[in-house]
Amino acid sequence: MEPSILSPSEAREMIREGSWKGPTAGMANGFVQGNLAVVPRELAFDFLVFCQRNPKPCPVLDVTDPGSFAPLLTAPGADLRKDLPKYHIYKDGVLSEVTTDITNAWTQDMVGFLLGCSFTFEQALLENNIPVRHIEENRNVPMYRTSIECVPAGNFHGPMVVSMRPMKQADAIRAVQVTSRFPNVHGAPVHIGDPGKIGIKDLISPDFGESVTIHRDEVPVFWACGVTPQAVAMQQKPDIMITHAPGHMFITDIKNESTAIL
Image (cartoon, rainbow, N blue to C red):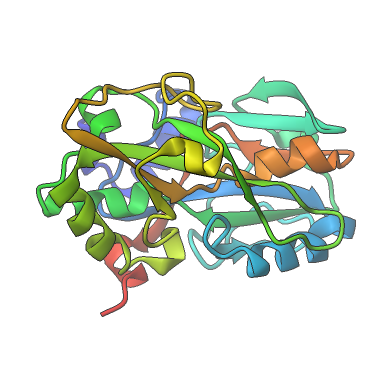
């Protein structure tokens, strides 16, 4: 079945069974996708405050009860331990494991956070005839660490990560208008144009994801990205933090338009 027309539950079932292991861009079109961050209960309050202070990269969609792996607000009955195609497990700030199932790592004090993802507003871009290059090229969206520092909370601090989509200048202006309607999934871009202004040295070598073609008549457009907690984990070095692998998101039961503002 074409991934784009799957229902969220069908997409999650494919992922859980191992039938889909790649990035989720374009899957279950019309439904919100979320970034995942899982921390022990003792760090959960600080992390929630960090998200509250940094709503552009970390807009909160759902938070689980300690020990629970069910996202009750966004996909009741789903399992955050198995329903993402790929996970990263960080220990003391170091990526120690990449896996497709975190059941063995999920303890009774774990708290799961689902954060808004820019994949959600990509459908709106496409509906406005704004090309999305990584979808065209069947690649993972390119993501970069920046020199933009997040507002710290407790021990959580670090740089903002951004995702990039190249487009013509007229499309970039329209993209600002379109994505501004989706503040719960990163909203409008944080930067347009010269990547050096936000500390990015080389667009061809993203820190996460894959590079895409940038044509001479295009400008790079940067959105705050939910991979930011991974950069924070590398800098803050908690004993353990579990995240999605970049581009491998959780597909919720929430429709994209429900996150839009008029």
